Image 1 (tube, rainbow, N blue to C red):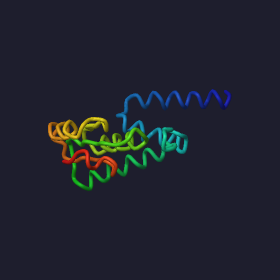
Image 2: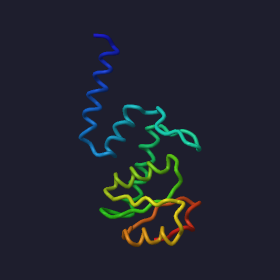
Image 3: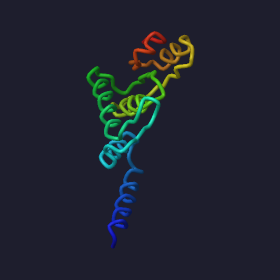
Length: 133
């Protein structure tokens, strides 16, 4: 059997195993499989699978360090690699995501945070004045 066919079989077996995993576990496995391959290409540059896993682990650890468990976590960020890093990190920590859209007025954003009973708001410096917890 050729090396190519063997590799194809390995990849298909791996893909089948992913179908039973939660999304954040799939990301971890893709990080191992794809490593430094480009996962996201946006206006700020590129982000590898391993970097996406690393960043999401940092978010999850920060939430765990703050003892945020089984609750809603709001986040407001740009449309770049930061978004999935935060989203996967929230999922990894066992919390639920409440994504906020940067174009909404501050009052609407505040309503979403309050109504969802978010325990934490994750944002970047550029959006910190738009909403608070």
